[in-house]
Image (cartoon, rainbow, N blue to C red; front, top):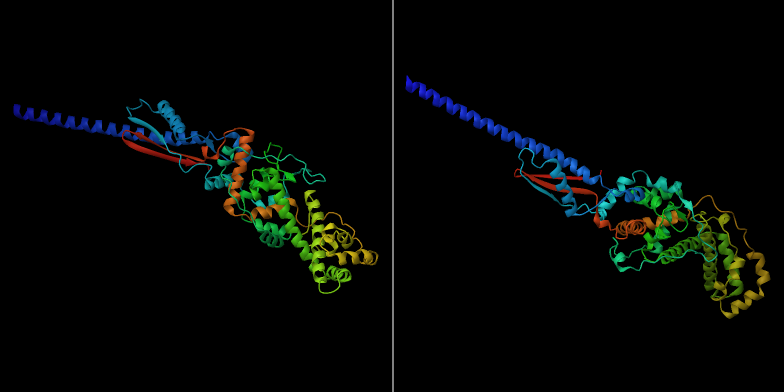
Length: 432
């Protein structure tokens, strides 16, 4: 009987010990599950905490969310969160956080584009055509430009620009064809469909020579022109775009001349009068080119005065007369001596044919300066256009707030890992 009682006691002791071991194991597993669950909860919270520290100026000025930092700084923040939230809790073994922000740099064009799309949703074409919020600047005097152009000479600033001085523009022939296809507001809307955030960013945040987007300080006067030409010299961008505009309008005006039988007949009559014989064809070309150029100068005056200019003009929309063209230096310098003498002799006779055309008022149809420049901008290579937009954001943030601002030091998301009780917990999140 004593042996049986002893065996029962041993059995009960074994069962009790097994139960205690199971209970301890269950408690350990529960602790690990609780710690793991807490880490997952805290980790998601900490990603939001990191993302919540976005730069206010970048958000207010360019509607883009990104925070300043680097791997070490974010790691230090996370370790501070860990120490406060999880250290010495449930005997957890925590080895610390490790942040890796690679791939979230705002200076990466793909990340910059995503940030723009978050900040500027909606229809770009309608916004552009309405000219919402833009103000006429009235910068030009009789010399065409009366603002002191700024130039970036600092090599560090230039070398850290996202574009790195990348060249690239669009040929005048291509632009002329694109302008003809745009034609009017409806054609421009079709061209801008799908352009989205980039066009809205340009229209709402950057100035050009004729209109401005806001009252903030901008380093460059001619920001749209910078996107087109890409020079660190502000005035050089203005001059380059004016030259492109002249070439486009001159080609379109020349097309309008040769599309008008009355103008063609007038040019032929005058050319044959002052240059009889085969060389009259040369004189015809000289007169037509000079006439188109004179009309183009009038067009540019209208555009820089925030007026509209039809893409292909009708005879009723023409503003200059042939008489003024024949008196111009552009014609006189190209004619031979005999043609000059005949032109002088027959001036009275030709005056009846070449009498001036009354200048019409500004047109309500056609394209304005912003729209002509937007055609140029949309004709650029996509990468060149995006990188120059990034340049302007970096330049203005340096000019307004931080002398050492660099898009590569700002991030649009965060990624980190935490090792707790031998298990690695990984977290990743970005602005949405």
